[in-house]
Image (cartoon, rainbow, N blue to C red; front, side, top):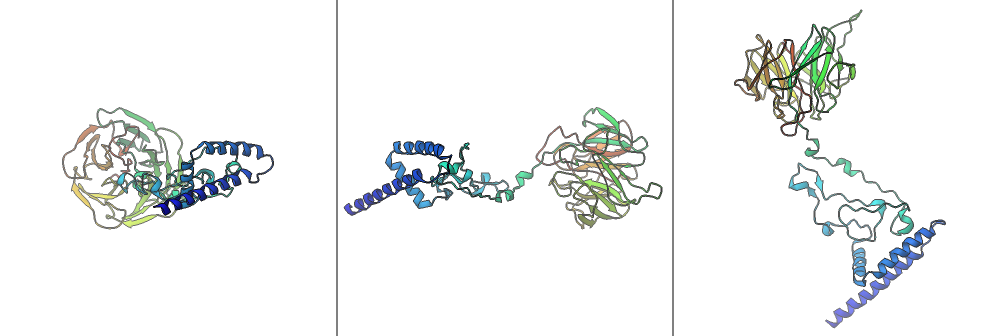
Length: 408
């Protein structure tokens, strides 16, 4: 026991002298001319504060520094958390995994928590703190931190819209229960209407596509004119994509919250991941030429995928690829009687059908056979679509997906 005490006393004696030598070195290091006064004042203040501190805490801190090194970024033994998924769910971001030290300073503190901050002063930190350096240190690994929760979107309910081609006039309902109807002009006679959330703000707005040859020599491309706000005005974007005779479609093909364009040639789907001209980003076959094609998010995963209708039977697929339908059911009186349009009518993140016969809309809130959940009348006939003002948020956390359709 006596030997053990002697060893401890010797260690403390040595550590005390090491501490004094370090302080002496700090107070007497060379500093650039003009900065000596500020450095001396700050250094003297720190020295006096340390002198007033009891010896044991100072020695303990010095032992920690010798044990863990001078980086100050050590193991999680000095924090009450461990690097892992936030709240125990790996659907969330990582927590307690990031270490930060302003200006590479405070290295005299051996063991700190995962986030290390320092007060910013007008005096460069390396002027008064010997542990600081002027070397830049950058770690961009945080840009790779990603979790599904970062891509959660808000679901917005969608409402009926009608485009009257001969009048180039739009009629929009603002609810499914005794709606108020607003109207405005946009487009030209003979253009095909589309809707979508072109900029990811949650509002599903209007657009038109010239889907025929026009001009003196017959323009052989399809021109898209999309608006990022509802109402009359100039297009927010104009570009060409597809050929005359293609069927224009829109949807959020990759789940990023923005609707983009696509065309169907026969039964070949050619989807773009940007609202611009170019080559298809996704291409596959689904359905047969002559089917009535629709798009929407059938399973609530945030991605719009293909569908088609034959008679009164709907065939829906949950991926943008060739294959058979994942969902099949009968609804409505068929394409020979009325038209179909898909939309997220209750804001739950899933697109479901509405059958439109004249001015009567029969809306179903599930992708299954059954009777209409909501019935309402619009003031006029025309091309039925779905739109969303984006201001009424209901349901879980998914975007209002596209339900654009080729309407028979």
